[in-house]
Amino acid sequence: MSQCYGNAKFNPAFEKLLSEKGVTAKVNEPKLEAGSVTVGGAIDDKNFAGLDGDFPFIDVTFKVENDEFYEANAQLESPIFVYWKQGESEPNKMRVLQDQTFSVMSLNSLVEGHIKPGAFLNEREYLDEKFDYTKLGVKVYATDSYRHKFEGSLDEYGYFKLNGLPVNKCDYNLYVEVPGHLTSRLTTKLGTEKDGKLLSQYYYARPDENLAGDVNGDKVIDIKDAEIIASNYGKKGLTVKDGGLNKDGIVDEKDIRFVEKNFLKKGPDAFKSQTPVEKSKSGTLADILKKLGLTPKK
Picture 1 (cartoon, rainbow, N blue to C red):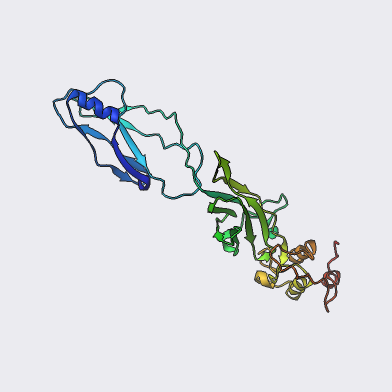
Picture 2 (cartoon, rainbow, N blue to C red):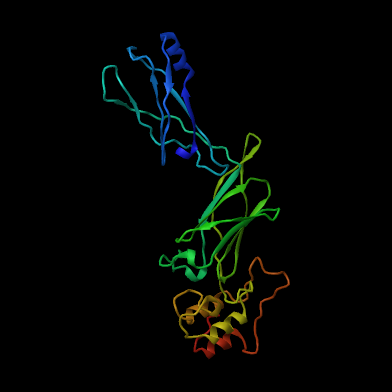
């Protein structure tokens, strides 16, 4: 809060009251601390008996630091109001009620959501909690119709945030890239119209699952990915590019089953001319599975 502090000055009604009483007052120097600010004022005349009744006292102004999305119907944390009675050295606290909220009319939207990498989803389709998803090389970003790119942030739980997305009437594309997986893309408009003006919005994104199995990162899942896994089958401590898709420490059946499940799928960012390869000198996917002692499920 302190970094947003603008100024403090007596309310005009209070200044008028002082003038009628024939006294003057001054606004105290603000005390700025992390997360709070203390403001106040004092009457200069020590012989003045004081003021009684209900009246507005001081107006405090805060500045919006940047034009990003803020929650609607916001309130400042409950302030503490104290005053001194004439002849007393200890302050008196007054209960403060807040019956009004405010909204910041931003022109930049906020997008949040969870990533869904197939190799790290449990049986209930939720992210496996034992992983730190900041260490997987995940990229989350958005592009607008002008090809501007907006980078997102990701926490260890797989929760991403994209802030500062300017409102416009065109679509945004939200991308999630996960090593060993096909890219997911979500297309949406951002912004709400109010009184003929386009304003920001909060959007909780639900991107599609990143399909696991793109071992070599060529934007398709095909026989080439199966061959890499087969060549390293049973080996431990290998990377995603060597076939360790789910980071469990060993290249095994779980990894090649991802390829089988999503075989011949193509990512949204692959070239139109790109075609997944169904078979090679190694044979078909079924042939590779059988050589590994596995029964094809498809």
